Image (cartoon, rainbow, N blue to C red):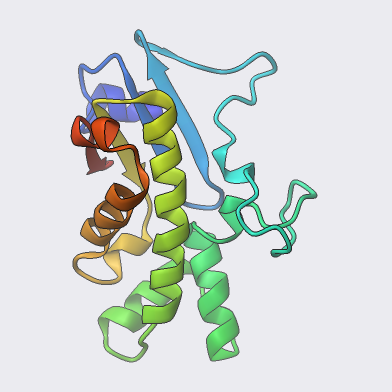
Length: 170
C-alpha cells in the first residue's frame, strides 16, 4: 500500500513518509529515503499490536487490547455488529449510516479516540512532514477525518504536529 501510494497516489514523488492502513488490522509502513523500513525480521510497522486497553479484547496476535482491536475498519464493524445484534462488514455499516438507518456516533467516537492515539504516536516517533491514512470508515460521515486530525492535535507533540500534514491515502 505504501509503495502504491508513493508511485500513483497522494505521496507520488515523496521519499519520506509514514502510512497507516486501517482495514483489517492496523499496519504502519514507513518510507525513508525512498525505501520501506522493514525491521530486522520483516515485522517493522506493527503499530496495531501496541496495547492500549490492558484488559481489552483478544487480538489475533495472542495479546489483549491491541490498538487494532479498537481502531480499524474491522473493529468498528465488529462493535456495530455487536450493537445491532447481527454481523455487518464495514461496507454494510457505511451504507446503513449513510442511508440514515443507523446512528453509530458512540462507536465512531471511540474508534477515532483510539486511532488518534496511534496517529499521534507515529507523529511523535517519526516527526514526518506528511502522514497518510487509509481506511474505509471515514466514508460513513462527513467530517470524520477532520475529527481525527483534531483529536490527534490534542495528543501529538505540538512542534511535530505543526509541521505534519495528515492526508487520506488514495
